[in-house]
Length: 215
Figure (cartoon, rainbow, N blue to C red):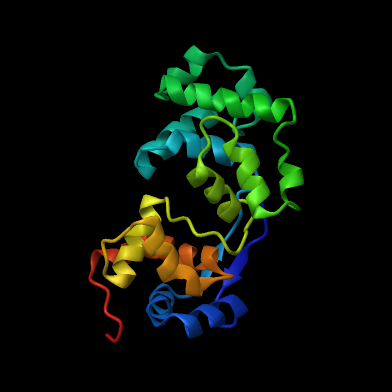
């Protein structure tokens, strides 16, 4: 299990974000201190992201749990390589996603993808190498950077969940990449940390009520 990490008012990143963005500062106050662990199984994390494409979190979690059972509790490339396509499809994973999982599995087994190496590479290089695999797009690669590598400055503007939190805080429905990047530029170099707070606000149901800056 990975190290427990904590963000609170004493964290330099949080102090920076609070000073730069009053709307985000309010959201951070509403959420409070955050504790989290990183996904230390990079392959398993990306497989779960492939499974979750275009699905609700609840359905994706069910399918991932079924694959975990087929892999005896840990989703690894060797374990998945031993499964037939029919076995993977039998738990509810679509034909196209089985193909994408196979693509990733092959890349890991032939060492085209080396997760240990990614720990020391720049974000742009990791993104480039991962998105070269058919089935892994910018969204999946950014989720890996944030939730597995803990990279601090990744803006996941392709992610629907992030955009829900973003729209709540800024009272906007302009979700174009240009608009989001412009509005969130002030978060740099801690865009990932800002995004974490918006994800948690969404998960806790805070976004169901209108956002009030001064209430």
